[in-house]
Amino acid sequence: MVRLMWPRVDGMRALELGTRGELRDRLNALVLAGKKTATTGLLAEYVEETEGLEFVGERLGLLGNDGHRIATVEVTGVRLAAFADVAWDHAVSEGEGDASLEEWKSGHSLFWSSVGTPVGQDTMLVCLRFRLADS
Image (cartoon, rainbow, N blue to C red; front, top):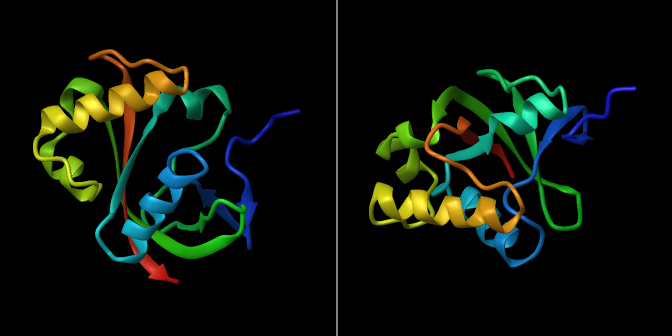
């Protein structure tokens, strides 16, 4: 039996940003305000869970802390990149207020380490871009 990493909601794959609690609330608020139009995931998680990559035009249900859909986003871009090669325009699109690419990398490295998945310069990432489709 294959276990799917991402739950489904209202017939769509779900998008759960960050970890539950204040972080997810903050990230979701940025999406709802139109300031966050990108996110980044670890390619290894897709491989481990045999989950296919998102595709342009796919709609995802953005989940709140309670597991319910609070909005729908539409994927506008999917790019694979090594951690060392993430572009500044992608980092800025995450809308989290990083002042530099180095700050973005430091923050994301700390986050992934804190959840037990440290990254190195060669760690492959999925750089996902999206737009708010409805809320």
